[in-house]
Amino acid sequence: MHTGKVMTMRILHTMLRVGDLDRSLAFYTEVLGMRKLRQKDYPDGKFTLAFVGYGDESENTVLELTYNWGIDGYELGNGFGHIALEVDDVYTATEAIRARGGKIIRDAGPMNAGTTIIAFVEDPDGYQIELIGKR
Image 1: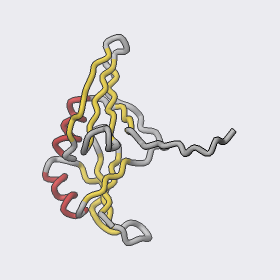
Image 2 (image 1 turned 60 degrees about the horizontal axis):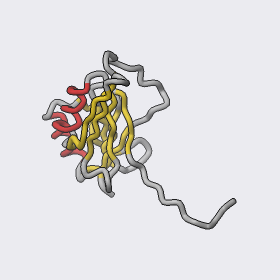
Image 3 (image 1 turned 180 degrees about the vertical axis):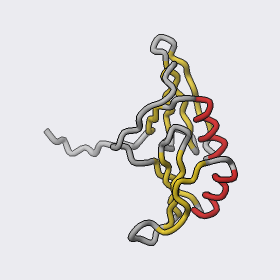
Image 4 (image 1 turned 90 degrees about the horizontal axis):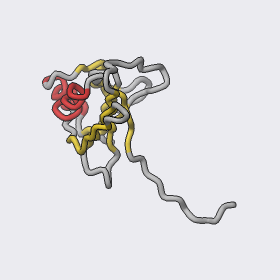
């Protein structure tokens, strides 16, 4: 039965399974400029969780990097699309990411059949990150 109350929700995080936690942490912090917010080992479950983002989890959506001990890679599948990051200038961001060793898989330019400037970066596990210019 509908009570008329509005349910407040927000996106907390997106989880990615990664094959090398140190390599992924270096990419997201050193190449994309996120901060490592927290990390914890779960020995009974044989996994480690690390959370990265651009701001505190209480007010920002973050990424949860899950490392399952002993598993060094995953098939990405074809259902997952990408993570999108807003940047001030896609051309400048692309060059900065390339200079930090990031893999650009689509250079900055207008999107297909549109005018929004975008680019795509690939993380060490093959996940795609779209850079979108501020509107």
